Amino acid sequence: MMSELTVATDGIRKYGSTSTEAAGRIAQAAAVDLGANIAAVAPAVGPVGIEFLEAFARAQATHTKDVAALATFYAGNAATAGAAAQAYDTTDHAIATDLTAAAGSTGATA
Figure 1: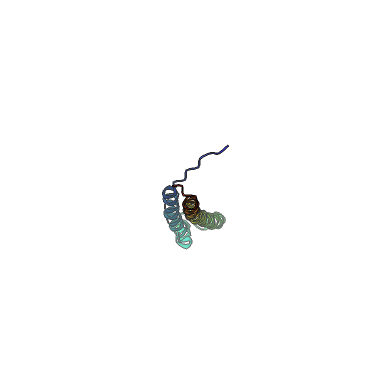
Figure 2: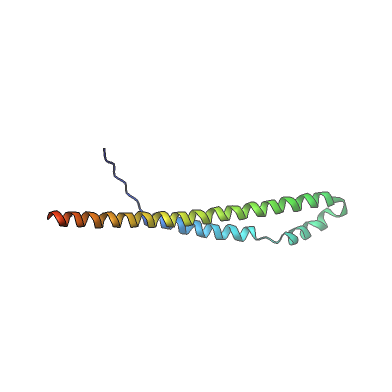
């Protein structure tokens, strides 16, 4: 039994472009100035809040690392989408070329 597969490669490429844009925006969010954040919080907690400030700094560092990893994930999605769209287009073109050649060798029209 044959089934039909239709792939909208322009749609895949658009998804890739959207993922690229998302990766850039997320990377910007990850590029926070941790020192500035800690300096902004320090006066509010004062000397009594040193332990809190240390925990806050660790949490901020972890958050920044995780957000950067998310940006990398989106960038990977973009690359994969582009490669998939290209592979579908290349395969489709190759099959069309082969079918045209086969039709020509038998005198049929493709």
